[in-house]
Length: 249
Ligand SMILES: Nc1ncnc2c1ncn2[C@@H]1O[C@H](COP(=O)(O)OP(=O)(O)OP(=O)(O)O)[C@@H](O)[C@H]1O
Image (cartoon, rainbow, N blue to C red; front, top):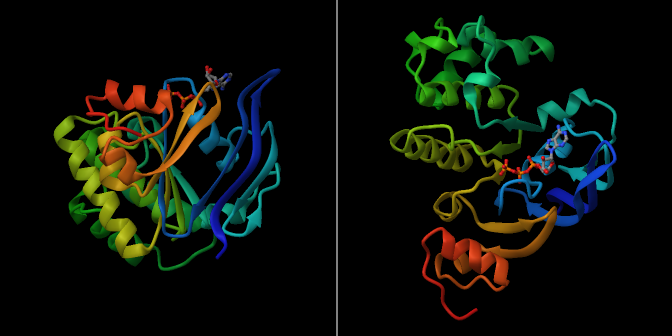
């Protein structure tokens, strides 16, 4: 089976500095895969390179069977979308929810605007009365629902999720995690997700890669995380720091 995401020997730089070094992994279609590790280890940079926001990379990036070029690629947006940590920053402050959701359809010349906006609001659990509000008239959780709805407007098969709940209050985090779980099940989505939060990985992911200093230290199934049986010393350190009880590797 073709991997939904295939990264081979991926090295990513900002100017003269490489921050991700020779990273390789596959994410299967329908899988939910997490990147975890300390701050600055290069997790977000991997998502940015896949989505075209960090263009200085070498190696191979294949998404849904198509090898990514370095040039902008409009068709890519219909396959794969990114959701950012801060929904306030990612939504235009002077555009209503309606405009924000309809925009991707207009850009890609897709019809059925009204029906699709209404359906997508319902899919992310937002009442239709939110349709003509502006971002500042929404709560943080509602804004993140809008950001997720916008990402799904073009019916992509993959979502790149960059700390999608870490800017939210704890009580709201659970709602958004439940929503992401439901959407993945209903729409057969593939997730590649960056998070600091190991309980989030246990809840939402099938496998994880642990990163440190721009390299992958370990790839493991979520069972190894749930049972405290990660193998590499750094992964075990990270797990213990999050309050987990280690078992023999
Ligand atoms: N636009 C940029 N220009 C230059 N350096 C950058 C840029 N964005 C990130 N970096 C650097 O690249 C490295 C990796 O950053 P990245 O954001 O990918 O880490 P991360 O693992 O996602 O961290 P965090 O968990 O804190 O978000 C860091 O050293 C960071 O300072």
